[in-house]
Length: 377
Image (cartoon, rainbow, N blue to C red):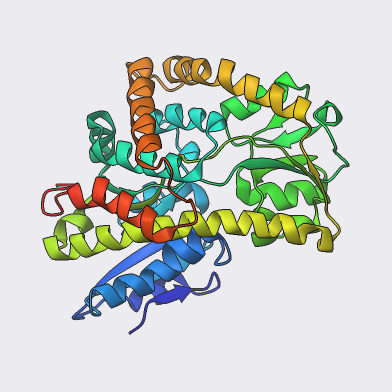
């Protein structure tokens, strides 16, 4: 049986019934709440499932649930813990109480500009830092791979051609540092899930939304947001692209774990390249859908970069202390920054479109060094 993508309309009981019973292959029930067209789903799950089945000679198969077929967006941690899914994508900002360190570090994303350095560093740090490993262990999950988005930008239902034009506008923001930036330019930050951007813009509850530009196409935002102000607002990397239920992971053989980790390593690179390409393609196609795309002015870029340089780190430490109750947020941030510096060096001079070179660096310096037999035990 090939891996199955379950449509949202399929009954849960019927879908799960197809994954039970005596079967030779190990089957992974995986859930990601983005649509099939989203790069994190298309490359990270749909294509990975095919790669995994081929690499395992049919020994491991994926039953893939997309959208809300299995779990709503904010239940991709609890559903993983409960074993409803064996593997999920999860946006960590949905569960800050459960993932305080992750939420603290995600604030730093506002100041990051390279998707490869960010995603590789996040994956390395979350797999190897003792504090992060202890957190995941306490939750009963096994982190297996991270991600980062292309640069967040601003997509609006009202005409916007500068930061001054955003004064007083209601803008969907993904986290506390983005909200602080919005307030700094006189806008009104609104906290809603990215899954609600379309309806918020359509109904006038939002004037603008901040997310990666691929959502103009993958979520059809260009139908309701006719103005994009293309200013870089950093990457988003909270949560994970891949995490397993700990009991399920524990039942896998070491050889199966090795195949899973190796295929995730390569797929992470393909997904990040595909994500960047999707954002660039959406911006290129947007005018044909009636969207006016305005590139940020030098003045607005300078102001935003100054905010990132002067405010972001302090905000992460402050939020880590006061909101997320992290014992040593400054130490956490410093260790993560050291990991970022490490990957900046490892990736120096490598073409970000050279998939083979990027895969070699990631596998040689991270995934091949993970002991599949003991990792996550």
